[in-house]
Length: 93
Image 1 (cartoon, rainbow, N blue to C red):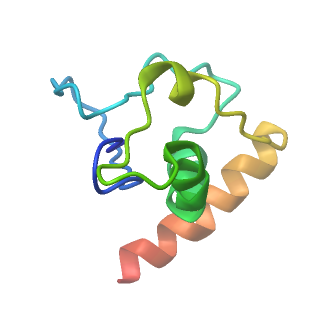
Image 2 (cartoon, helix red, strand yellow):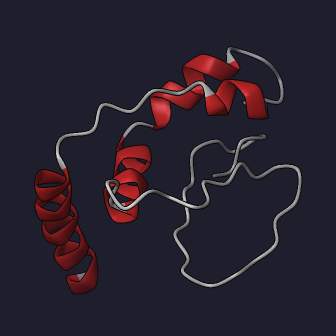
Image 3 (cartoon, rainbow, N blue to C red):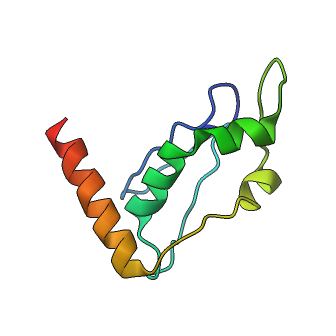
């Protein structure tokens, strides 16, 4: 997740990668969480990052603030259903 300057452009990858200090990453996601659901949640909730960063010349969401973001997650079956629908729409785009 880009957290300096242009906030809230999530990227989802299933390969090992390296990032710089402008990126906050979620790794080792537990099986009870669908990573696609989390990706779409952040895609649709960019305002949360903007609110955390405040009105500064260069908006920044530091690692501690990013770690404290709470996501309301339904059970895994609902996460899977939502992620499936949104992924299928993305595939068509």
